[in-house]
Structures are given as C-alpha cells and as structure tokens.
Amino acid sequence: MKIVYKHIPGETSPAISDLYDEVVTVNTPVFRQFDDFTQRFILAHERGHIDLVTSNELEADEYAFNRMAGREPLSLRKSVLALQTALPFTHPAHAERLRQQVRRALLWDAQHGNPDALEELDYIDRYASYYDTYTGSEQEEYNRQVQDTLNRYAINEFNSGYKLDTPTIVLLAVFAGFLFLILKK
Image (tube, rainbow, N blue to C red; front, side, top):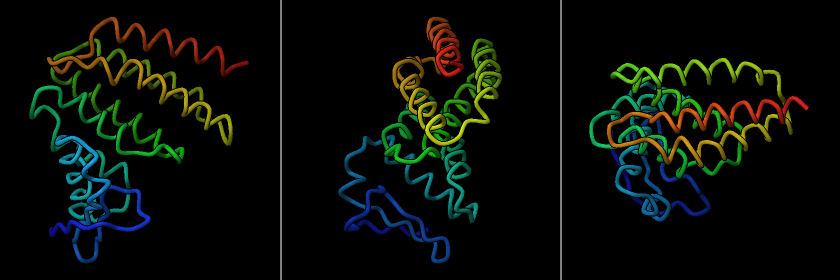
C-alpha cells in the first residue's frame, strides 16, 4: 500500500483509498486536524479497504478497530472517538457506523473481562430492534438522538482500564428507555 499526502480541493474526507492501485491519498489539510490516534485509525481504516478489497465502510471500520483495540491505554474510547470526530454525520449511515463502533468496543470489553459490557451490549441490541422500521425523518431523528447519547455518555466515559463503568451503563439504559418513550409517541 502506498500513501500519498496532498491537498484534495473540495474534498472533506481525511483520506481516500484507490482499491485498484492500492494507494491511499491523504487529504493533508483535513487529516492534520485530527490527533495522532485518529490519524492512525483513519490510515488503518483505509488499509482495511485495500487489504479486504472492499468499499464497505463498516468492514473497513471493523478492520481498523481490530488492529487498534487493546494496543494502548484508552484504545476503546479513542476508537469510538476517532469515528465520532472524523465523520461529518451528514448521512444516516454515519450514525450506524458509530453505533457499530460502540458495539465493537462493548464486545471487546466483554470478551476481556467486563461482564457489564455484555449486559449493555445485549440491552443495546434489544433496544435497537424497536427502531428497525423507522424511515425518513424518524430515522434521522433517531440517529441524531443516538449520536447525542454517545457524545454525552459512552464516548466520554470509557475508562483507562478499557471498561465501561457502572454509572455509564446505567445512564445509557436510562436514556435508552427515555428515548423509547419519546419516539413511541
């Protein structure tokens, strides 16, 4: 894989992969706005596109997550934050990508000794099934509320032991219940 650093006029993405030529073009002015971890995550994401020969963003996100999770303190939190800061959230798929990243972090956390993370993952999965039928403005509102929740609670509460603490899980559960009641109306 070759990496080329240059300004791409009119492009808001921090990097773009060319699967055919196996080249990642880093949009220098956008890329430089991010911290070191996020830059490494972006490059790992783009490498995922090339190594997996896919244009699927969720697959590339998972590839990057798997390369970075547990390799340094706060890597779970930082991997969620990397997507939260790099995505513009102008498309419903962006909220889904962030939601899947939180799921990955919870699953990794559960597999590495945090039973509370598994309970939260189960709760999130059950809760999400209520909204599978939403479309249009309902889906956009739901995605915006999920984004707000992640910004307020999950993203800011991953601790240095790679575990979600109990107060964070309780806050997520309370918010999920509150959101369910609001959206049910």
